[in-house]
Image (cartoon, rainbow, N blue to C red; front, side, top):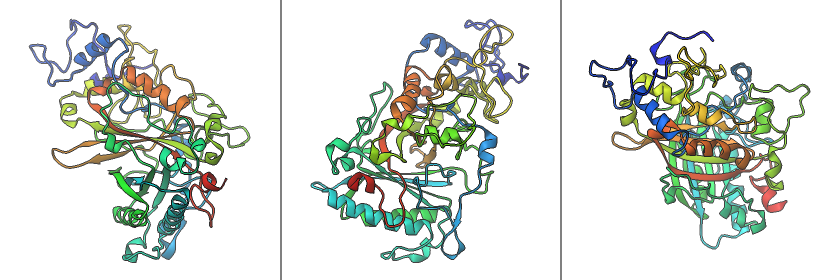
Amino acid sequence: MTSDPRPSQDPQMSDASGTESDPTANAEGSTRSGFSRRRLIASAAVAGGAGAVGSLAGFGVGRASHKQVDEQPRRDTQGANGAVAEPFYGEHQAGVETMPQAHGEFLAFTLKPGSTADDVKRWLRLLTDDAAALTQGVAPLADSEPELAADPARLTVTFGFGPGLVRTAGAAKVPSWLGPLEKFTIDRLDPKRSTGDLLIQICGDDPIGVNHARRMLWKDSRAFAEVAWQRTGFRRSYGSVGESRTQRNLFGQIDGTASPGPGSEDFNRLVWGRASGRKDPTFSSRGEPPSDLGANLPDWLQGGTTLVLRDIAMNLETWDEADRPGREFAIGRTLDNGAPLTGKSEFDDPDFKAVDKRGLTVISSASHVARSRDGLGPEAQIHRRPYNYETGPGGESGLLFASFQADIERQFLPIQRRLAEFDLLNIWTVPIASTVWAIPRGVKQGEYVGQALFEG
């Protein structure tokens, strides 16, 4: 490997005692900031690979290739009045494989006490009809501001079921994985935001359209449920960068490099849980994922997937104290273009065995990319679709980490457990909410979301 001469690409010193000068240190040997590369190296050495929780799980997990994403055509259709619209009806729900939009709302509901299966079916029929209309630029019948629905701007509405909703169709229909994740040591979960019976994920490129859809679906729900919690997120605005470009989070990291490309064989297996049936399928450098990851999904969920939604608070003030070499050492990637410290471009494969001229590994085994990827098999990959959030000066900043995968036990948890043992990014992050959802299959016209659950 050709070494990069930039100081920020040299993540380790010759020894922990600091006999070799740190380029970020002053004459007294102290660094310019509270979190230098030297301090992080010491933290990694003391930890010895054991410690806290994976906060931003899946940083280095499985995109097939950049080219594969670039080659995916837009799936837009023409909605009412020629507006740009994403299909609502189809084999799968939109908002999973859809190229991520600029704005997102996550809205969770708790069923009213005594709710029956018939109550839930009426609610889901109403939500399905109105979501189908809104995503195509058509105002629902009860819409008092129909002008706000005219331009959907790639609006998608995705529904997720919690155990309480599924239980109304029969206790035996609740899969064992549909519930709280196992406890992780650095979780500081707010129980009020770690619950819910129905999740509605609303995404679009126009915040007015997203807000209007949220309000309409909220109105539909008042007779059936109470709001459990709500979060509003954002990504880079549509048109600011190429559609296939990976977003950045509030730490400035390129976030989601290795998600499987929409339409790829990897995506079909890792998210929808089954092979596409293509002749001569191609896979990422991670290898061929199993074709049976959907075997753990019940019959009513075949064609759907699972969602783990983690709310990750990010401490931007202490992140500001970290120097650039320290940040890149913790991540295992450069900040400018997201390349692994052993590569030149974002989609280069990290080389976890590469050593520098002193015989030290270039990518620390305690770095986020190493903890989330090194040594894990091709099945331990997820599709991340995250959204940033910020609640104003002095408020919370963080990441709505949305992880889609066919099998939580085989895909998400191996990564999360590794990060739970130790991950240098845990210095700046803490999970404050966590939920797990069943994402039902898509629907045909005349059906309602979750129909297979209630009517077989």
